Every structure is written in structure tokens, then in C-alpha cells.
Image (tube, rainbow, N blue to C red; front, side, top):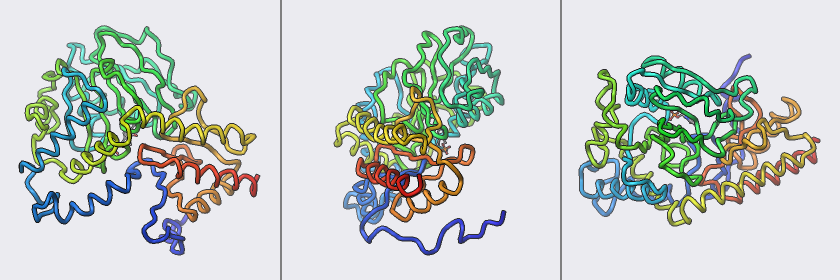
Length: 382
Ligand SMILES: *Cc1c(COP(=O)(O)O)cnc(C)c1O
């Protein structure tokens, strides 16, 4: 099929009124709070009255270091990170962590074997990437169920000679999540939390390491947050590049092995302040449940017009995925939603259908607008 630029971006498109923002349902990068965007606009020109923008000043300046320090302590407070865990800021978003985890941890035990649970696209990609660095075993997967669930934990997975067990906390493409995390005992549990960090309460002590690419709940793209138990540092493969070595990142208390992405770090600090001011992770979790429940209840009450892709017990509170009866109605749904100021609802290419990504910055009003639109669309097209 021929795809003309006009098809990719329709020219005649209703824009939200000046000063009004669209509700952006993109899976990532994603919507950020308006106050964060506005503060960033100011800081780009003049940061803290310095007469220079936040992307122009030294990352070693007192003003910038204070900001990174504040982010570290806010992150520690918001997620109740115990003292024996380090909080690191890494380059390269979520997927570079899929290399950094094995670089740094696969040699934690001499067998150089790691266990990966395949619950979707990013989970299977992580397992593929890790095969370059050691032995990968996949004891559990939900491939045969077309990833409509996460696998049920089986204590038989726990291999005492493995270096770690890797899971993907929230499966962004499918719209599933681990409602509770496996108890892996002495085996370090590693979790990709790119699409649900700061949206649910965690007991960090259950994990050896968690990481999150920033662009869904934390900051613009390009940055990753890593929270790692101190005793797991220092086992990196000898070929690990310096900038990709957690121990090197942890050597500098502010995690600056080189010049970091200063704009992303600045916006991360604003975002963490926002989360705290809004009531912290407890409140983010409560809102995420309320937002997602509104959509799931509507899907369940639609008499099969909207069909959720995933098993109800495995539903994500961040990514709500569903299908329409046919391709024609799907295309009309997406086009009309876009016209009404709800952007980027198209599902991932591997899944099709609709995906409403409703991260921390999505107001309840945005989800209500979508729910009203869905009811009205079904009334006209059901
Ligand atoms: C978005 C996402 C990623 C990809 O992150 P990049 O920053 O694009 O590399 C990885 N894992 C999960 C679970 C994601 O949702």
C-alpha cells in the first residue's frame, strides 16, 4: 500500500483552541503535566535567575547539582527506597538497560545464567539481547496465550545457580501487568518498570534491581532510572563500557560518570516535585486505578462492541487495550477521537486496535472525555 505524507499526518485537523492542550494518550513519550511544561519553557531561557538556560549551564554547577540531589532524595522518599539501594541515572532509555542488566549482573554467579519471563514484546526482546552476554533460560512465558496475561509464578522457576530472574512489570504493548511480584527469595529479582514506575506502591526490598526508561512517568526520553541493591554492584563483565557500568555510575554520588542529559534531569526533578505535591505514589496509584476502572467498566458493559485484549485479572492500570468490531470502525474511531482532541490512541503495530495509555499526568477529565466519546461512538456505530 502506498502511504502518502497526507495519510500519515492529515492536513486539515481540528487543533485544540489556543492555550488548550490535547489529551495525549501516546504510549511514550507521553503527556506531562502542564505546570512542568510551563516551568521548563521558562527555565530554557533563564534557570534560577542565572541569566542562562538550564541546558546551557554546567552540569557541575552548584545550581544543577542541587537539582540532581533533590531528584535523588525525592525518588528515595516517593518510592521508600531503603538505604542499601543506590539510585542511578543512566543514558539510553529503557532498552539500553536490556544490555546493561546482563553486562552488570549476568556474572553475579559463576554459571552466567539468567532467567527471563516472557510476558510480551519488551520482555522477549530483553531475553534476546541477554543471550549475547551469557546463558538465558526462559522458564515461564505467556506466548501461547497471545500474551493476554502474565505467566503464573511457579516456584520451580527458582534456580539457585542463576544470577537473576527478570520480569517486565507492566507490558505496555499488550496492556497486562504483574499484580503482585514473584517472591524469588535469595535469587535477585530484576524488573523493567518503564511503563509503571511511580504509579503503584512498591516494596523495593523485593527486588535486586529495577529500572525505568523515563519517558512514560518520569521525564522526557533518553534517560533511565536504576534502583539497585548495593551488593549487586561490582560484578560487571570485563568488557562492560565505562558509562554502562553501574558501579562506575554509582562511584559519583550523583551518578554523573559523564555529562548527563541535563534537560531530562531537570524535567525529572519537576515531575518528582509534582508527584509529591499531588500526594505521592499512593495517590498516583489511586488515580491510576480510578482512570483505568472507568475504561474497563465501559468495555465490559459494551456488550462486546469493545473487546479487551487481556484477561481481566491481568489488566494494566497504565495501558488499556481493546479492539473494535472491524477495521472500518476502528479507523473512524481513531480519526474522530483525534478530531476531538484525544491523540495517539492507535494500538501498537503488533496488536492493532486501540491503546489508551493513561500515565500519571493524564487527568481524570481526559479519561472521562474518552469514555463519553466511546459511549457516543458505540451509540452511532453499534
Ligand atoms: C517503552 C518501553 C521500553 C522502551 O524504552 P526505550 O526508552 O524506547 O528504549 C522498554 N520497556 C518497557 C516496558 C517499555 O514500556
